[in-house]
Length: 70
Figure 1 (cartoon, rainbow, N blue to C red):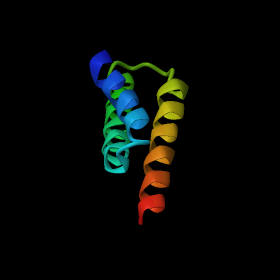
Figure 2 (spheres, rainbow, N blue to C red; figure 1 turned 90 degrees about the vertical axis):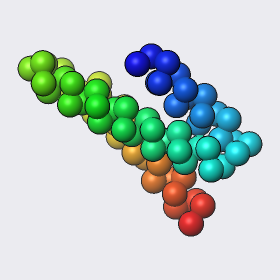
Figure 3 (cartoon, rainbow, N blue to C red; figure 1 turned 135 degrees about the horizontal axis):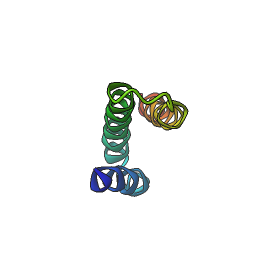
């Protein structure tokens, strides 16, 4: 899972040169953090602030990328 997270981060950085890649990387990170949030809920963890903050940041990156290229 760490490799997927690192690939998303690298995709956002490489996205400065290839804008379409940035959109796909942001979408992948949103899916990753949705999965992390669900995983925390499934094991009964009540520490949801971390995944929620990272999910919100990934959603913001995706929305900004989509509105910028629209």
